[in-house]
Length: 141
Image (tube, rainbow, N blue to C red):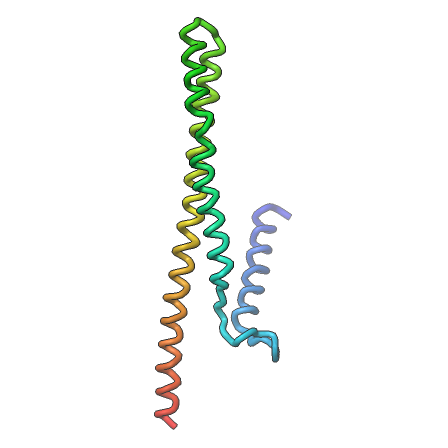
């Protein structure tokens, strides 16, 4: 079996599973409170808070070595030591990776805050639509 054939078979199987889930009604007692979309805001909030706390600690503690390594690299370079360039390279790599990690933590925190707010808006919108539908259904009786 070629890669393309295997990939096509996997996509078909995934589409069938998704279609089955979307087109079925949960068994008695298996559907929670009857809503299809459930987001536990407490979980999102906890993860977002952890990411925000990590961001704060990392910004503060991850930068502690920067001034010392830069000063050491400068002193070694000024003293004509070859290792000065290597220490400066370590300093630069650390800064690059630290910024990348800080950006990732900020994105996680911001995305979870956005998701939490967006799900609340979606829930309110859906509840509004369902209320209108039930009012119309009662009116039509």
